Image (cartoon, rainbow over all chains, first blue to last red; front, side):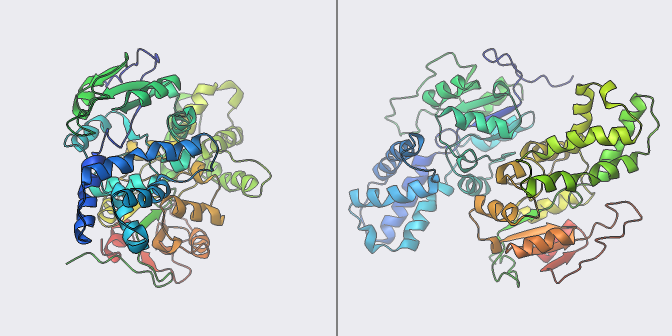
Length: 248
Length: 248
């Protein structure tokens, strides 16, 4: 029997590509950044609340992108934004970035390239990939997403970084230009994400949508995005569960 | 023992990414296009010299890109250029494209998305990939290169199509922007190609270079590119041979 692609009720189209939000949905950024920051602090003989450090660094991500989304500032890569924000986070946690040396800070900044996947991610993506195009739909730049994939064995078919669309989610062009590079109608692209706001923006741009629950992305006390908050096309407990629901 | 990346004598850098010219170097476009064209002709009850058809279609590729490289015309994808040239080639071979229907012609045009790799390509790329980033450095657009990879099992790590660099080889920006998306110095990127003119342009842009012999790309009577015509960093008889020379 020939494989029948999943048809999205909301777009009325058969899905050809399933694109995944990456930070939080595919990789566990909090655990990964905290582990690297803890090692960095230990090497400098410095006490650190590593989870708080990770949370604080991540919290500066949206305001940094917002300056670009609003047009106040030209495009800069996520690597560049992380590096700028790193100085601020270090100071907040009692480091003097001026004393640490550029090479050490660039090395710590690269921890975003070496984040661990959630335990089900690689297996789940390999399953989806048998029947669909799989790729990230992330605010990460191409080299960051590529390094991450090489390090962790993430089996992307294609990587379209935000430095290729030159914009950031949740602006509609981030979704639409990605579909354009794939030569697909937006309705043939499914966004899979652990964040309801990302899915809202993807749906507004015409994409099919799937929620993937990641209830410990922000640790055991997480309060947001514990469940789907709208009638997304699909809702899954993991990427293998999404693969099953897609018939992959 | 830790893997030692190949150091390019010409760039003085360790190679991090090996990027492959695709049409002719990784896939056998002539056999693939001829096979699809022969099936198309048979379905229309038409006699066809399928190899000549493939050669004629390919021959229109450089002049079509030249209009874009020279600035006479804005960027258009290789899919669009192939489609324009198809009408001309069909007429030359006794078809009336106006009688064939747009859908049939779009389908034939997609034969460039379904080209067969040379017998050693997939195995060789998998070997290079164990130790280096591998990707195409092709004038093909992203969706073409992605479809080709999915169909043939070509194990790219990343696909940076000409629609992302928005220019065509052999202009220097085609090589430089590709290295830029990888966040690599051009000297850390090796271009592997079966065409000496591509390697000349890559070297001029600062890339490391490897010649791969494909002496039957244009059939058994091929006269050009039978051997390396300069002191490229490496010269190989196949992609697995290149993998060996790179220590991969």
